Amino acid sequence: MKFFSQILLIFLFHFSAHSQSIDLVYKETFGEFNDASAFAVDQYGNFYIADQGGNAVYKYSKDFTLTASFGGFGWNENSFDNPTDIAVSFDLYLYVCDFNNNRVQHLDRNLNYISSIKGNQSAGRKETFGYPKSINIAGDGELFVLEVENKRIIKYDAFRKFIRNFGGLGSGAGEFKNPKKIRSDNNSIYVIDENRLMQYDTFGNFIGIVPVREDVMGMAFLEKNILLAIGEGIICLDSKTGIEKKLTFEDILYGSTKKPDLNKIKDILISGNYLYILTDKNISAFLIKK
Image (cartoon, rainbow, N blue to C red; front, side):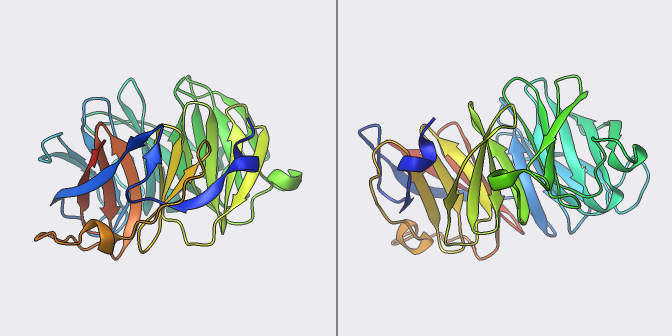
């Protein structure tokens, strides 16, 4: 895949992707969080939010109604100390990075505790991790945990058996500097690492780097495009056309009578025909029109 040899940094507003015109239309805002850090959505449209300020996880239905919550500050099975990221598997299990407790919490879709993956209980072994910062589940169910103590990714199979780690010290051009978020499409693993986006295949083999001149808070995928959330808007990385268009939130919300507060963006995702933007306090929904 020659993705990074061809790619250009471009801003998204009214851009062309696969010969289709796409617009974003603000619809509504929902949720009430203390200091949200990340979110995920399942195939039924349910949202799961990690709130690091409240040390909790919340579930909202597809009609944006709060249906369950889990957590509180602490060290036992039913608590968190700074949940930094969250992922949901196709079989509707949740995995939450419990950063300061040095573990990943495994929950069911109703936010009931199942088990923990504890990185500090296997000292000296390759799968040891100290502080899990970000997490992602690939399409085949494999689990990828980004841990910042050793600055690497740990890969587990669908049964949560350790496979390998990559990106750490000695990884050459694929070595991380300061990784903060991991996400994947159908073919690749992407990591936001300081002012660059790093790409690996799902086996953990390094593919390439693209520099990003902005502080990136979130990443999502739309067809062949990678969308990156920055403070003033969205960057779109288009590997096919290289078309350059510009989007700022000021552009999107121009003329709108409803204007959400998008000052502290934490994450983005795409579900169905909508782009969702998570801030520290709530979620805003934007309709993708083609």
